[in-house]
Image (cartoon, rainbow, N blue to C red):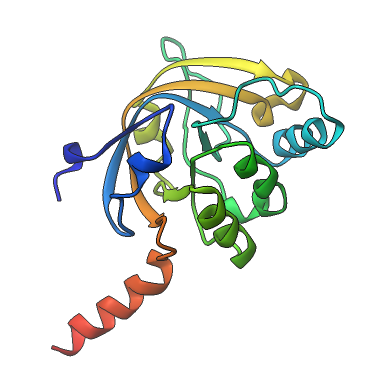
Length: 189
């Protein structure tokens, strides 16, 4: 598949996600919000208390990433994904607020997959260990909230041609389940 054929850009609509199929390669352009465990905890606390969030989540993309410090002359250091499952207990309230795309690595819980289907969201995987490559797709970084969290602060990135793979599509397909089955069938032929 041609990586340039499918581009995702926020604000993302449910309609724009309907054509995505588990296993497709996509590119992300534009704004992406970065949040890890502690930032997610604070976002959910704000939601539960009825206070405003530091960004409008409707139609947005969240990337589970812990950046490394930027070397001289660069906007960010390594920008690889972190394990998504650590955010599972915080994900549903953000999906209910309109987050449409989640990006990280590893499987999602059955509860998160059900919440994605209910709220019209997809999950994409970025390749673990490719943080230096991903940093080349980041042109700007801004700390939006909680700088006291260091690398877990809430960030806004501007990305261009950021590669990812659709893991969970709107139909409920999961590449982590179907991929190994497909490879076993192919290897028996």
